[in-house]
Image 1 (cartoon, rainbow, N blue to C red):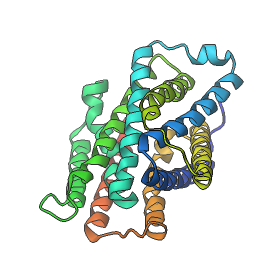
Image 2: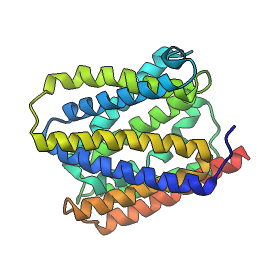
Image 3: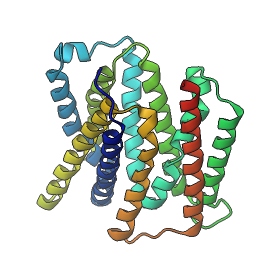
Length: 289
């Protein structure tokens, strides 16, 4: 087992969140010019190549990476992630980076809420209270009485629900499969699903946008690589709170590049969600110790 280095893990998580925020900005730009499904499809081509390259370098190669005790569950979670990415990118286009990420930040709370029915885990009253506070934050952001609330506001909430289910299924298949196998299915099966959807929306891209697309693919590979390194050098529960920095970086990008702004209700709602999420992570760590 590799030696744990919490300090390095934290810095790697900060770098990872920054890379993923840049990826979100690139996705928003390209999806504003081209169909979202096509953009995600090309992104997955590069991702699949990256996954296969990683698998080949490990002992046993692709044959071992593809061995799964739950192949149909693996395939479903891979397909679910493709749909979630498409939905989230659509949210970037219609709602913006700031408000999409503000709502999406509730996904750790959804993981906690669904861990009982999906994984059979026990959720105590303190964590349920934190989940309730977090969803009050979501309601404040959405302002159902008016303001920002629109059908578009539901898009990132749906993406958060799908990503939470994806995370729970990843934990479920971990009972029989290695992380390398889950990563392999995510990239390869995901590429097949993304292509089956996106091929119908193909249109020619300009040379400059191919450059942006190449940068999008590179940030995707770089982000996944640094995330792998994070979990190699530090415990997931210790570095997970720093994943909220993606919201900070994405918000800064939205303001500087896309001219978005942060409204008071969004800031207040995000504060409640993040505090509730951090408390939920802390309770989960206490239960494990």
